[in-house]
Image 1 (cartoon, one colour):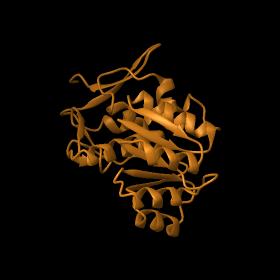
Image 2 (cartoon, rainbow, N blue to C red):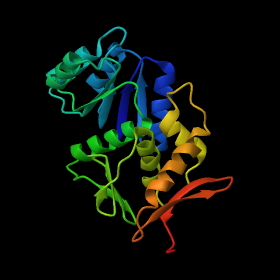
Image 3 (tube, rainbow, N blue to C red):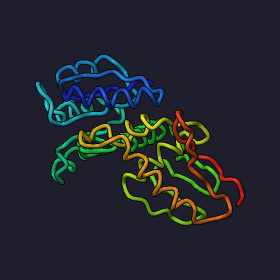
Length: 227
């Protein structure tokens, strides 16, 4: 499945494309609206990630022309124009989802996968590890049958871990998922959020999960051994 990423900010385009490719998705990039419109006129894509403030042709015009051609390709609008009017106009023109900048890469990845599943007629998927579960459509965590309250950063770290449950995730990968778009962030901040998550995950006994540190490798989300 090919995704078309339409984003004129080169660095942001690089990071988003890298994150999606790391998630085993095929990504092509366009840097302006005119190129995107030309590609969408001649090529088939499983999903379009579309900025609105684009050179040569505004993103809303790209979306309008795409739908006028009868295309039902899912479109995720990704933009700093997060005002209500822009959001309503984009959805009315046929956008399937809307994510405002700044955003977390983990959230973008989850929304992309949800749209791809929906377009293929698949139902929502719940990821589980012990008593911890994550609904990939609602993006809600539950633990021991109860909702798990998390800050946005804690949520992003735990989402990155549960999507790779049972596999080691490097600190660098977690940092890219959670902080790559924050120029002031320090990679050591990951340790702070892992520590906070461990405290929250200690609260139950049956099906308790733990975040294990693998020195020199990264972190592993796994079912904890009984105390």
